[in-house]
Amino acid sequence: MDENAESFFSWTSRRIVLPHGATDEEASRPPGLVMDCRPIPERPDVRLLVYHDDTNDADYDAVVIGRTDGANDIPVITTPEECLLVAAARAETGPAIVLAAPTGDDLGKRVREVTNQILRGGPLLCLILCTGALSVLLPLHSSTPDTR
Image (cartoon, rainbow, N blue to C red; front, side):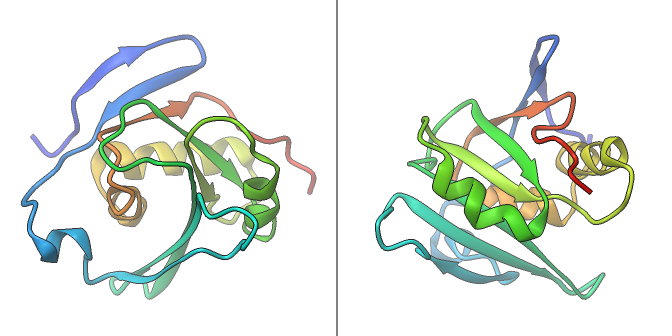
C-alpha cells in the first residue's frame, strides 16, 4: 500500500497521482525543505527548491516552472544538476518540474531511479510534494540527451 496510484500510461510517459496528507501550515513547509526561492528575476514564475534528506545526508534540487500548486499532469523533466537553471530559463511552455538527475554514468539508470523514488517514496517524492502538484507525468525515457 506504499505505492502511489497510477491512473494513466502512454508510450512516452506515465501519470502518477501524488499522495497528499494534512493541509495545515506544517505540511506546506516540510522540515526537509531547506530552500524555496526565485533565482531568475526576469522569470517570477520560476522557483528553486532544495530538499535535504537526513538519511542519505544529500541534497536534491528542482526548479519549478509556472503554477503547480493544485495542478494535475505536471511534466517532470530530468537534467544534469549543472544544467538545472539553464533548462529552467529556456523552458517557455506550461508548468513543469525540472529535477537534477541523480549522478551516474548510465542515463537510463538515472531515469529509473527518479521513477522508482517517486513511485515507491524517497527524497525526490518529498521534493515533488513541495511543489503542491496533485499529479505528475514521468517520462519513460530520458528528457534530455546525455552529453557526458
